Length: 353
Image (tube, rainbow, N blue to C red):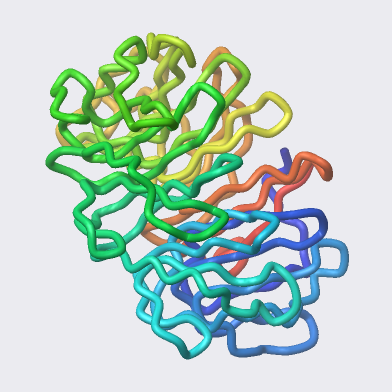
């Protein structure tokens, strides 16, 4: 992967928190209010989309009053979650559904979440959400909930993330992998930070137990391995665990939180607000710095081989928060990156071989 981004893609005047794509259309969510392509600067509150082939912004504009933190594409439209009060001028509390085409027509779904929604995912029947919320559709929920894709009604699925928010979730055939700051799941203290829940009833799958111990900020699902972006009081990290048991395969430590992780062509990409990757086996100071200067410079982004070895990729992104979103565009062998950075581009960049 080249350290230099491809030119001529839209830029944004505020942080990009999430990126997804479907075919040639790339959808971007965040806290921005303006987007700029080669031809113009236009109003785009919280969400925008562009054509990957031309780089031109399309007319899709949900006009979110607030911040979009995650998105999911479906045949019924694009689910938006975050911290917002309205979409298309109509009240929507932290969850909304808009058409994926045209100008992003607002759909009837009106599930009110009392508290920020950080993550969204789905299977064939349900949409799953996680975050800081305590109620959804007027019913108590412990930072996790689900609703029916067909009719928008709240589902009985109601696991409880105890004593801390959910940062990310990934829906698979085996269940819903959940990561965050929580100190127990469904009351089980041995399952903190990183857990697996059954899709049918939200029961804890006790056979998966990574015992991660530090906040899980983001999750990427590989063929037999899960990759967790880690935060924490002593810098951050990237952890690879067995998809079946959660047994740790390797961990790399960095001097700042890892906020995003994605897989492209077998390489694992990490984004965050770090500057250094500690050499393997090196411990960290209380500040998160690598002991003895045994480290490699990687500014806000780094990538690793499946065995955990560091590669040469170094995007040299700036600003304190750096990279907050990554999306692997496998068909084009490209990595889409978003965040708070203003270099090497303004809040959005595309990297290719």
